[in-house]
Length: 242
Length: 222
Image (cartoon, each protein chain N blue to C red):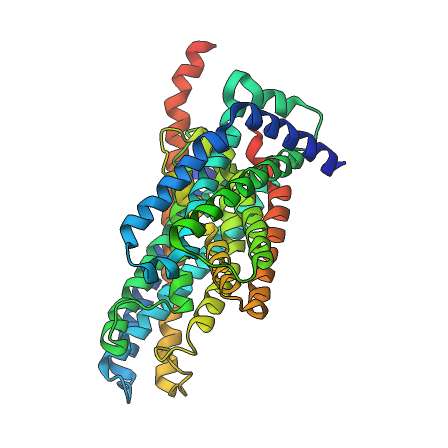
């Protein structure tokens, strides 16, 4: 009895926490939109189109953050064999694929007017594209088997290997480009960034990170429910067998 | 100890290969078909074919590596061989290293034949054969390492054939880039520039062989 009450209480607080995070991410995204669209001045060279940076950079940051989380959770799963870590890795990988694709799409939208092309084989772009492919592969591996522990183990190995591969991919692409042709004209220099622009950029990164945390709590809850459903679907069979 | 066990596994796989003639019987015609298809796609202009030849060569090797690593685990599913392998009192990492070694040797035999084909078909002139051989040895080890690591996963995904190449091809992107550049430079005789690419290939091999040794056991347990 007490245990049920406790569990109900725990669920209520976790739902409250989820709601708080949801509201916080909405507010943060609104502030970030205000900072990047109104407060920050248009870029001296690129004009208004440069404002895409305030969503493009945060999306790219989330891409790499989520795959770092997949990497950490995968190691934790292999060491502890706790399904919680597998749920964390799976949730983070899904969100990561979403934001990697978003970062690439936003980069293309930005690249077309500024560089004059949707795509260039720039090291950072190419690495991000390979990153996206690796983690689409990760999600595909998760669908191979219905055996939960096997799925979790295989996915964890892919999550670890994939993350270790990314710096090597980046290095090879940097060399590839630099040996092909000198420093590319497409490269954005490191322009001195103005104060409010920096503020808008950091605001965007913070807002996206809070949104990531919110999406994670949602996806983790769905993961727990999926697991419970699988258990309950199985239980009548188990009882009959007894 | 580990090396001894791995060589036993490798020898076993190579004996199966020699008796079944899978690499020479199936992979070689496959690689030749791929090269001819590339010839149709980019030819018949000599200058274009000459420029893309190193890339075509590596694409043929890459596709063959995917098939060869899958084959390495396919033979284990017959007659419950994998269970026997799991019950054998050997280190699981030795299974990985042995498979990778066998696949490496098979692919190197294939590379030799494919290289002759490319020189004949695409008129590739090789200024520095020694460095090119080094690039192929180092590159093929990397391909075999990644392939042997995930081949066991591919074997269980028979209904989803595309997953294995989809997983392996992005992971081996550095091998493809470094291998093609090294082959290109070695063919042109720019030997001093080849070395950094060989270093990258070697680093890739070391990273993936050691990661494979560390995690392969997890892929086999149930």
